[in-house]
Image (cartoon, rainbow, N blue to C red; front, side):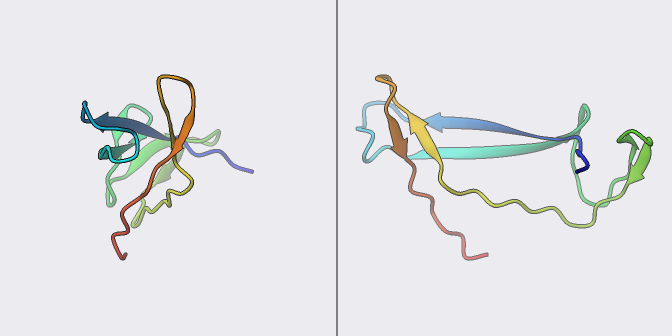
Length: 85
Protein backbone atom coordinates (compact mmCIF):
# COMPACT_ATOMS: atom_id res chain seq x y z
CA UNK A 1 0.00 0.00 0.00
CA UNK A 2 1.35 3.39 -0.96
CA UNK A 3 1.01 6.34 1.42
CA UNK A 4 0.11 9.73 -0.01
CA UNK A 5 1.16 12.93 1.71
CA UNK A 6 -2.33 14.40 2.05
CA UNK A 7 -3.22 15.71 5.45
CA UNK A 8 -6.84 16.44 6.29
CA UNK A 9 -7.18 18.94 9.08
CA UNK A 10 -10.54 19.15 10.80
CA UNK A 11 -11.76 22.28 12.52
CA UNK A 12 -15.02 22.06 14.43
CA UNK A 13 -16.74 25.31 15.32
CA UNK A 14 -19.81 25.40 17.52
CA UNK A 15 -22.10 27.92 19.14
CA UNK A 16 -22.57 28.12 22.89
CA UNK A 17 -25.69 27.96 24.98
CA UNK A 18 -27.43 25.18 23.03
CA UNK A 19 -27.81 21.58 24.11
CA UNK A 20 -25.86 18.87 22.27
CA UNK A 21 -29.12 17.73 20.64
CA UNK A 22 -29.72 21.02 18.82
CA UNK A 23 -26.32 22.66 18.55
CA UNK A 24 -25.22 23.50 15.00
CA UNK A 25 -21.57 23.00 14.11
CA UNK A 26 -19.54 23.46 10.95
CA UNK A 27 -16.91 20.90 10.06
CA UNK A 28 -14.34 22.35 7.72
CA UNK A 29 -11.62 20.39 5.96
CA UNK A 30 -8.39 21.65 4.50
CA UNK A 31 -6.27 19.50 2.22
CA UNK A 32 -2.51 19.95 2.33
CA UNK A 33 0.34 18.41 0.35
CA UNK A 34 3.51 18.69 2.41
CA UNK A 35 3.31 22.30 3.60
CA UNK A 36 1.29 23.60 0.62
CA UNK A 37 -2.46 24.02 0.30
CA UNK A 38 -3.91 21.49 -2.14
CA UNK A 39 -5.56 22.55 -5.40
CA UNK A 40 -6.58 20.49 -8.41
CA UNK A 41 -4.56 21.40 -11.49
CA UNK A 42 -1.40 22.22 -9.55
CA UNK A 43 1.71 20.08 -9.80
CA UNK A 44 3.39 18.88 -6.62
CA UNK A 45 6.96 17.59 -6.72
CA UNK A 46 8.85 15.28 -4.40
CA UNK A 47 5.92 12.97 -3.70
CA UNK A 48 6.64 9.58 -2.12
CA UNK A 49 9.88 7.64 -1.91
CA UNK A 50 10.57 8.16 -5.63
CA UNK A 51 10.07 11.95 -5.41
CA UNK A 52 7.44 11.77 -8.16
CA UNK A 53 5.38 14.64 -9.54
CA UNK A 54 1.64 14.64 -8.88
CA UNK A 55 -0.89 16.67 -10.88
CA UNK A 56 -4.35 15.84 -9.51
CA UNK A 57 -7.41 16.61 -11.63
CA UNK A 58 -10.04 15.59 -9.10
CA UNK A 59 -10.14 15.10 -5.34
CA UNK A 60 -13.03 13.70 -3.30
CA UNK A 61 -13.54 12.20 0.09
CA UNK A 62 -16.55 10.99 1.99
CA UNK A 63 -17.39 11.69 5.60
CA UNK A 64 -19.55 9.36 7.69
CA UNK A 65 -20.08 8.21 11.26
CA UNK A 66 -18.89 11.50 12.78
CA UNK A 67 -19.12 11.80 16.55
CA UNK A 68 -18.32 14.71 18.82
CA UNK A 69 -17.11 14.20 22.38
CA UNK A 70 -18.91 16.28 25.01
CA UNK A 71 -17.42 17.67 28.23
CA UNK A 72 -18.34 14.46 30.07
CA UNK A 73 -16.47 12.34 27.51
CA UNK A 74 -19.67 11.00 25.94
CA UNK A 75 -19.72 10.45 22.15
CA UNK A 76 -22.57 12.32 20.46
CA UNK A 77 -23.43 11.39 16.87
CA UNK A 78 -23.36 14.31 14.42
CA UNK A 79 -26.27 14.55 11.96
CA UNK A 80 -24.71 15.60 8.64
CA UNK A 81 -26.63 17.72 6.15
CA UNK A 82 -26.65 16.03 2.73
CA UNK A 83 -25.54 18.27 -0.14
CA UNK A 84 -26.97 15.99 -2.83
CA UNK A 85 -23.66 15.64 -4.66
